[in-house]
Image (cartoon, rainbow, N blue to C red; front, side):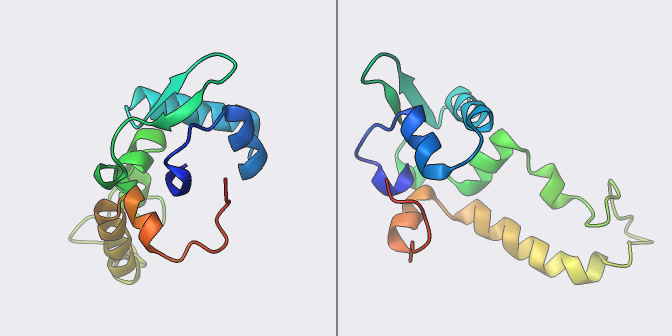
Length: 124
């Protein structure tokens, strides 16, 4: 949708283009709509469009609204928290890429997709 921000896309078209299970897609669209990222219109010519400018929507917000960020911030070995005095064996190895990843999704907007190499992404 971000690559073709100028047009409204139906759930059916998104389903066909993305090749993901329809039930999962509908849940995503509902979650994104409830979070205020997209808005929908019903009817024969209905579909979905972004509710906010793309340069104000960060990947971290989307992930947090759909899946939550806690899984990315937690211990890579599944511990709820790595204690400071006794971290898990992977803590030092995982900390740098985790921090880099979180920084990237917190500073990257959907508008940034239009400024990058998009080869391999679905074209709508």
